[in-house]
Image 1 (tube, rainbow, N blue to C red):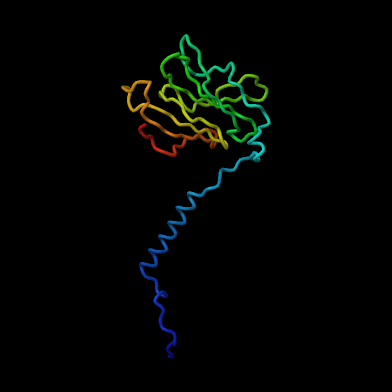
Image 2 (image 1 turned 135 degrees about the vertical axis):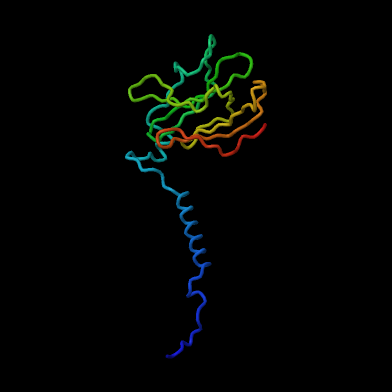
Length: 191
């Protein structure tokens, strides 16, 4: 039998380190592929950039809307509002920051999404993003690129007076699979 002139190559035999390297690489590919998933398929076409910046239907007005607030004898005040197509259907929704008209003190805010269906004259509340019962004051509120963003000022305990919130949290809500999903890019931090 004739011997080969080429020396034996060290990597032609499998050793445990080769299996370990292969398993690690495969686990990395599986983990990366689970993070990079495409959006869910829908039967409706997503609107192009023009539809998102200029919806075909005007945004609902906040006038005459029954907000789910218990204000007693004082009325509800719409502090701020912004509009945009949040669900990609070509119609704008209005997001309103609302609180009771307390006169003095800092009443907690509620953040509500308003819409009106085809043929409906008056807007209705379809989602509550921030409930006033949670005692937050909304700051830096905006609707951009199909998302609602806000900075919430809150309280670390019930002993903190309403004049002086001592926590701050930045939040974002986006429409996903039939509901608003909240994400928190930063943890709650003391003010």
